[in-house]
Structures are given as C-alpha cells and as structure tokens.
Amino acid sequence: MLKIHHLGHSQSERIVWLCEELELPYELLHYTRDAVTRLSPPELKTLHPLGAAPLMEDGELLLAESAAIVEYIIVKHGGGRFKLGPDHPDYADFLYWFHFSNGNLQSGMLRFMSMNRAGLAANHPALMAVKGRLDLLLALVEDRLGKVPYFAGQEFTAADIMSVFSFTTMRLFQPLDLAPYPNIRAYLQRIGARPAYQRAMAKGDPDLTPMLS
Image (cartoon, rainbow, N blue to C red; front, side, top):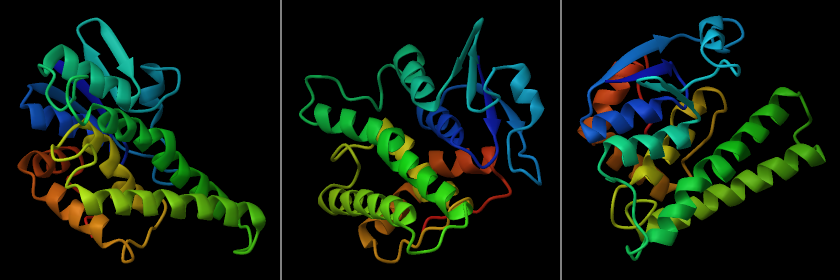
C-alpha cells in the first residue's frame, strides 16, 4: 500500500486527490505547519533532506516532488489514467499544462508572494514586474478555460490535479482576487463538484473549506 506523507495546506493535497480519483488504497500520514513560521515540521526533515512534502513511500522507495509522484502513481499504479499518451490529439496540450503548473503558475505566485512580503512599495519596479508576469499567466489560463472545460482539453487529467492548488489553497499564503476571471471560477466549481476532490480535501485538510470562488 502507498504511504502518503501529507503536509496540511500544501501542494501535497495533489497526491491525496490523485489517489482518491484512482480509488487506490493508501495510508495517509498528516503533518501540520508550524503555527508561527508556517513552515514544515522537523519530522519531515528526518525523511528527506529538504524537509518538505509531499513524500510518497512505495515499499522501499521514497519519492519527493509532486509532479514526479503524480506521474509515478499514474504509470505504476493507475493504469495510465489521467495521463494522455502520444497518440491522443491533446497530448501536447496535456504536456504543456501539466508542466505549466509548477514551471510557470506556481513559481509566478511564489515570486509575487516573496516580493509582497519584502515590503516593497506598490510601484517598485521589481514588484510591478512580477505582478505583470502573474497577470499574464492568469490571463492565459482564463483564455484557455474559456475554450475547453479542462486544462488538457475535453478530458479531466493530471494537468488539472497539478494546477488547482495554485487557485485554491495557495491563496491562504498569497491572496488572489479571482473576480476578473469568470472562466477560472467556473472551472473551480466543476472541480469542487468532483466526489474524489471532496473526499481528498476532507481527509487531507479537514479544517479547510476549499477556496473555489
């Protein structure tokens, strides 16, 4: 059975959600952020040098990085579900949006959060630059979700599992007004209606009401 080390209010919700979508048996080990620093607890450092989650154990294997864990579980235990293959017409779109989540969207939000916490003036060039980049990313997503119901196209895929965190739980750390983005908000409502998502959030973060609007 898979063992999932889940840090509350973090990207590791992706792994819990994936296991629920695939209806895989798993053991969930829950960790709580430090109340002052909001960082991972020291127990995670005993498992992995970076002291972060998610972490997944599969027998003797310990694997970190949410994207790597998602792909591993899909290929090794999920029969390839939620991962489009090279013969699928939306294969390239799937690859792009699967990697967009951490390669652009989440990193863009983290840069904006860091600049905000540095106490820079609203018109500081560095803050304006990262805010401008984030606005471009959100506009790109809004346009995409106005054309198709899911990131890869017509099908729900791992690209969605990778992307949702940035629009929901991440807003606990960096508030983001989604009022100007009706397509993103409608998408989040579709995601929120998925039974597997509801189960995952209830198990992984029972203290949190998902931010779906």
